[in-house]
Length: 120
Image (cartoon, rainbow, N blue to C red; front, side):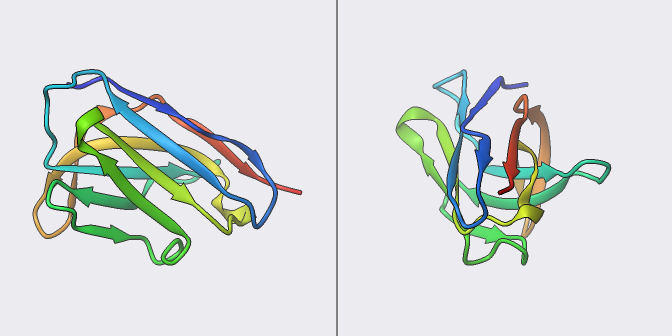
């Protein structure tokens, strides 16, 4: 497994923005695909966005046009830029590294989770 360290969560007003980061502790490892998940209180953990090593991206319908996933290969870090945030985006966000087979396949390595709260 790979250690993943998340940062960037917090409290933001509706319409605001946040950027989440996920850094892999091992700089020499490359990943086939990287994803962001979120888990609202009392609900299941769902895929929000993923990006492959070739730059293929996809998003959950609920965040399309508002969230952008990106990666920095040099630093083995990937990001989730979240704009136009809504109260329903409130959740604990988790990063993950996995595989790509015409869909994102989660791996065993997860970040520690970061709380995002959207509230006025």
